[in-house]
Amino acid sequence: MSLSIQTNISSLIAENNIRTNSIFQENTIAQLSSGYRINSSADDAAGLAVANKYRSDTAELTQGVLNANNGVSALQIVDGGLNNISTIIDRLRTLATESASNTFNGSRTTLNNEYQGLLSEINRQASNVNLNTGGSFNSNLVTFVGGGGSQNGAASVQANGQVNVDLSGSHSAVDALGLGLSLTNIAGGGTELSATGTGATNNTIRLDDTATTFLTSATQNFDFHIATATGNTDVTVAVTGGASGLTGSAVIDSLNTSLSQYGISASIANDGTLQFGGNTAFTATTTGVATGVAEAVGVVGNVVNTGNYSLNSSTGAGGAFAAFTLGGGTSASETVVFQNGSGSTSVTLDDTNAGTLDQALTTLNTALNGTGIFAVKTADGANISFQSGSSFNVNETAYTAGAGGGTGNLFGGTGALTVTKPSAAASNTGNALQALTLLATAVTNLGLVQGTVGAGINKLNYAVNLAQSQITNYSAAQSAIRDADVAAQAANLTKAQVLQQASLAALAQANSAPQAVLSLLKG
Image 1 (cartoon, rainbow, N blue to C red):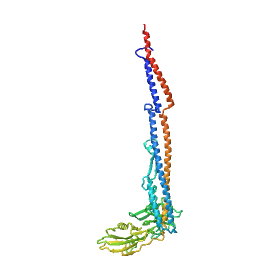
Image 2: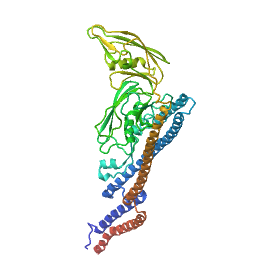
Image 3: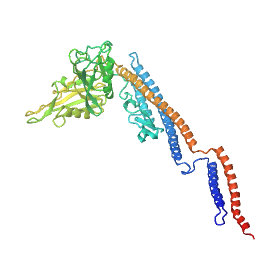
Image 4: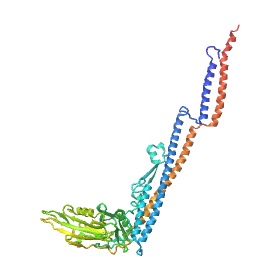
């Protein structure tokens, strides 16, 4: 290489190496002081993108673990409430069993007072754990734990990262309404009513015959007229057998699914036939099915709740109910006085308030509200049945016939009317026996809810275990990409320092090299 004064190549080479060694030393010091191999995008852009995804997934899962643990805590609170409600139901069954015995000589009213108080306590506790009907937990509870795999898209993340505990629907509510107990009582004045009672015909089919299936490929309709707190309700309950038919107990279950909300229950009587019961004023009828098909019950006529005191308008002196209409003149006018332990109530019917059967029912029930006496349609829907759980008297005090074609008739003749006492078949234990049936169902339903809650707790715990495992593995994957190898970088720091010092010494030598040219110029 030629000697030159203008350009010192060796010095330039030394300077370039000093710059390179300085960068190497700075990068090494940055890794050792931060603990990261990647301190900026320039260090490893592709690696940084992957590491950031792992870090983001870890952050999501960490919060997801907190979510799941909070969910477990909430469900454990619910589970404690369910255990307590289960204990209350045990007491309800004890009280109902005591009242259901004919040898009980105490006060069923006292038993029922405690029974009703416990139903209220069930409602309070169900609301307290938010699992009452329509409560905030009476829904599909979704806990987002995360870890759904973001590489599969947002929809997959949401679907795979959620844990569902389905407590929605009335069957998951554990208040008295949800458990089917809201209308039960264990007071005296029984509610048993066999369809073989007054007015019923052809009810000879034994539902307790386990060798028989009923309503194979057929449907049987039961038409109920029911007195409720808000007025009369007409309900048709269809029992459908399907291709394989139904067992007798399945027929009862199908009826009770629809009737329990009205305080009416179906069961199998001692003689194996169908019976209805309830502390509700009701009438019922059913239509037969095709010949040769084993039906649930034979054709039932004008059945009333014979557990109640009752009086039908069709049994009055004037015969069946007739709407009060003007015709070409004036309608009839009829005044009837109802009396029981709470006092007397007078009702006057004419064309202004009883122009139709439904209008007359509304007028009568409005006036009788709070007396415990109810007016409900007879099973044929043409007349009115008055029913009450306690005795009452009816006296028609005035009747004025219509003029010029005017009509109207409830009883149609003045004087006292005969009220039928409860059927002898409706025993003092009827309410309690009905309550026991519904309590047994409530125990089963509560157990199903407890099973759902318990399974939900386990699902969330399993989700936490998976999330913790993913947090560990994602952190390890991020570390492998992003963390510095401290041992290697410590060795690199020593190397960088030696190279830097050597480069500086070499630069000093390179800078003094051009002075050798002066020796050529000496004379």
